[in-house]
Image (cartoon, rainbow, N blue to C red; front, side):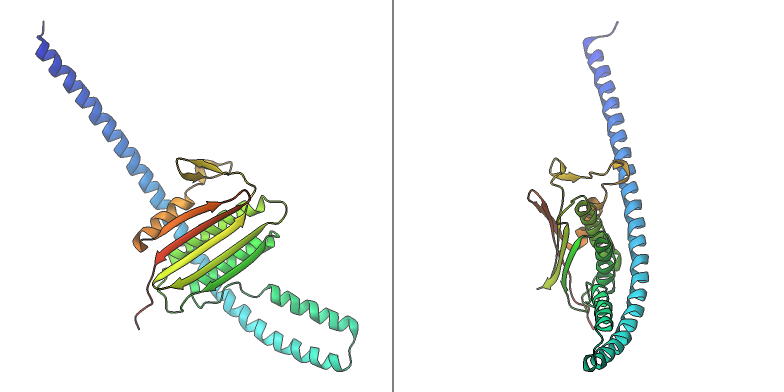
Length: 252
C-alpha cells in the first residue's frame, strides 16, 4: 500500500527519467549528425582544394602554349591573306575559333576563384550547356581557397545537374563582383521546373538522397564566419542563387 503522495513522486521520477532518456537520445543524434556533416565538409573542401591546385598548374601551362601558338597563327594568317588559299584560310580560322572556345572563363588572378570557375564551367560546356561568366575582383582580396571550393563547387555542381535536365535552352550564368567590402556571387541556371522544397529548404532531387543534399548546408556553414547570406529565387524554368559575404583586401 502506498499513499497518493508517494504515487505522485514515483510518477514524477519515471517522467523525469523518460525525459532525460529522450534528451540524451536527441543530443546523441544531433552530435552524430554534426560530426557526419563536418566530416563531409572537410573531405569536400580538401577535394576541391586539390583540384584547384591541379587546375592552376594546367592553366599556366595552357596559357603559355596559347600565347605562342596564337602569335604563329597570326603570322601565317597574314601571309596567306596576300596569296590566299581558301581551304588553308578556313582551316586556320577553325583553329583560332577552337582557341577562343578554350579561353578561360575567369582571369582575376585569384587562384581558387579562377580554377573552380574554369573547371566547372568547362564541364558545363562539354554537356552542351550555354555558359557565360563575368568575374571581377581585386587580386589582393583575401579569399580562402577551401571556402571558395565549397561555395562555388557546390553551386556549380547543382547548376550543372539542373541545367543538364533541360533538353533545350540549357544555360548557366555566373556573376562574381566585389564592392565596398562585400563579395557578390550570383549563379543562375535553367532547370526542368521541378523543385523539392520542405519547410523553406530545397531538397535534392537525386535518386540516392542519403548521399546528397549536404551541399547547400555546407555552404551555409562556410558563410557563417563571413556573416554571409544566401538567397534563392526561381521562376518556372530559371533558378537563381545570390550570395553576399564580407571580405577585405590583404594588407601589404
